[in-house]
Length: 135
Image 1 (cartoon, rainbow, N blue to C red):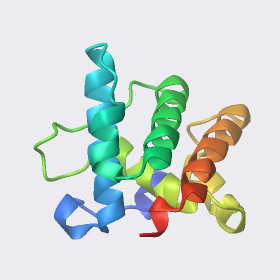
Image 2 (image 1 turned 30 degrees about the vertical axis):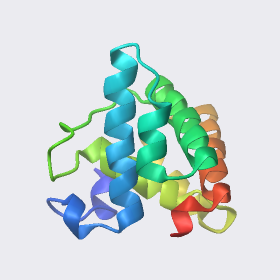
Image 3 (image 1 turned 180 degrees about the vertical axis):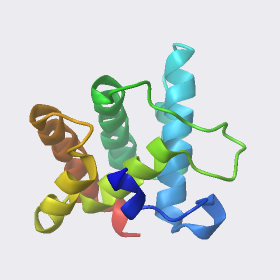
Image 4 (image 1 turned 60 degrees about the vertical axis):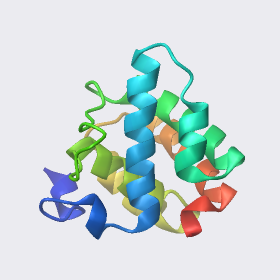
C-alpha cells in the first residue's frame, strides 16, 4: 500500500509532534460524539485550543467521514497508538498546502476520486490556514 511509504511502523502518540497527536485525539472525540448524536465542538476546542481551528477541524471531519471509502477507523480514546486512517489524516493535513499538493495527491489518489481529493484538500488547507498546525 502506498500509504506505508509515508508512515512510521507502530506509530505512538507520545512519539509524534504535539499537533499531530492532538488532531488524532480530536478525530477520535469527533467520531465518538457524532455517533452518539452529541456536538463535539467543545471537546475539539479543548484539544485544539482555538475556536477557528475547532470549527475548521469539525468541517474537515464531516468531509472525511463522507468521502472515506470505508468507515473512518479510529482507535479507542485511551489507546497510545494510531490507526492507519488516523495516520493518513494527519499526513494529509500536513501536506495540504499549495507547495505539497502533489504529495497530498500521491498519498490519497489510490483511495479517493478526484472530486473527493479536491474537497478534502480544500478543507485540510483551510485548517492549515488557521495557523494551528504550525505550532
